[in-house]
View (tube, rainbow, N blue to C red):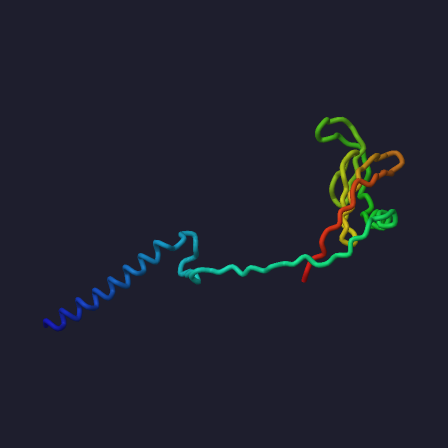
Length: 144
């Protein structure tokens, strides 16, 4: 009888120590994790050093501007509507799914150069618009 009691006590103590370990583990557990989710321990982050490649930098000339301008999408529409800020009726243009007004800037990247133009005029009557170059900035080529 005494042996049975001692073995029962030993089993109960083992069960309680396992339950206590589970409670301690739950204290460190994020309550928003799914039930049964266990962390992998300490996660390490791999650091990758990226070295900038040698890029041949050439000056942009008129030919580069013309090539980039040719790659601009055609306007989806030119129309007259209320300006969002002043509520005055002005000519607007849809280019690449966005609405542009006179004075806005349009940017396009061509051959790793970001070209920026300013919209000088938008004409609903002649369905035409004019752009003037603002800047051309070389962007780095993505390293693979």
